[in-house]
Image (cartoon, rainbow, N blue to C red):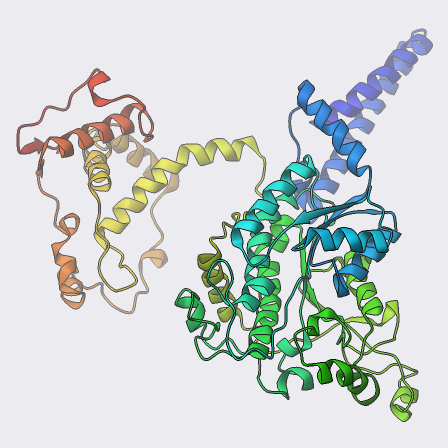
Length: 599
């Protein structure tokens, strides 16, 4: 209709113009207008067919909304948002006062295309760094966020919402991390959880759950989690050096992960393993969130390994000799060394490069040749294959493979559930796009109660069971709904409108084909035999007993529930009435212990 009226309006103007020119020749004018209308119809049909034939069909209508009348307050807020952000993208990054995060912010601000919010533990330190690096403070906002505390994470998210002024978040970079390999014992967070796992994984998990809804309206939203080669046991760095990242069955998480439980698997604490397990958890969760939310939110979830940054504050808790010789070892022996500046360019690339808008990817870089690598470098035209090494440039990025542990879907589901319980995260429903067709909305509303009523009857004959094998008990409200259905639908309507409907249905639809009713390889067993094979308690469910001509009313409360249900089904289309039973102008005549049903 939109296209029809569009071309109608357009062609009306054309008709008015040509009427003046063609009035002297009525026959020519009639032929012209006929041709014009046919042309209009063909265009409308062609455009409509083009829309319907597309893969997304009417998905373009999903964001259609009626015109909004803005209040003065809303107008002021929009003006403030425009003044604060302009046309820049909004980026949130954790842990940017040093190392990888610091260099990433430096690169983001250098483009003059981003407004960056830095979530840091030490605000004063961040202010000093921003002054040293000469950050553009018009486009850089510092906010406190202590990842050792879930309360602090929630406070940060609330303050960020006020700061956004309604602007959606374009990028969320989960970068902050700690590494405590030398500790012989665990250190605990404010919430009583092992620090490494809470800072690196759990707090970021909570943060994503709170910010995901504020990213939906961004044109190209991305959530990037900084992983590590040590979390992938399909590499030398992850699978050849003890301890190995392994969450096992998540017994520690399932037990609540509270002090003194220091490891996700529930076993003894090792500082290096806690770090590796946290990075494994981040990469697993990136894959899970991609599967759960990417299609219905448009958010791209990915993880990266920027390389081994051997000279970074991440190793500040290692011994002095390690901090001195580890960079030399990585630079000249393994070739896996990456400077902090180059690593910052890599995280920036995943946030900035249009190629990195792909979701469900683990990004890595092929390091370039170094002195002493010789033949291997020459054979590959200067490219050393393998994630992490320095060099290679912007185009050396590639989609890396992940280990079976990272791709363990069943364990990902358990990780999501247990981490949700530990953090108290509240995730939005993963709803897919539904047609905005008003007819579908009306039909769904009308059929909703009928479907619920029919399903209730189906479950009454063969009740379902709980996870522990015990039968599901029907509450008083659901029993009353069944009773009301028998009285109204089967009793009154079934013998009047229902009977006419059945006859009309047989006349219109005809008999059911014999092939549809035959072909079963076994006769259906009597219900009594099946009940004997089920747990004895199933026979105790009142609703499974054969229907009788009387209904027991235990007390006045049950009687009121029955009356309310019948009223709802007759007068309110199955929806619960807002009025109390005392205000209703009708009454079901019942005796103290019995109500006669319609036969």
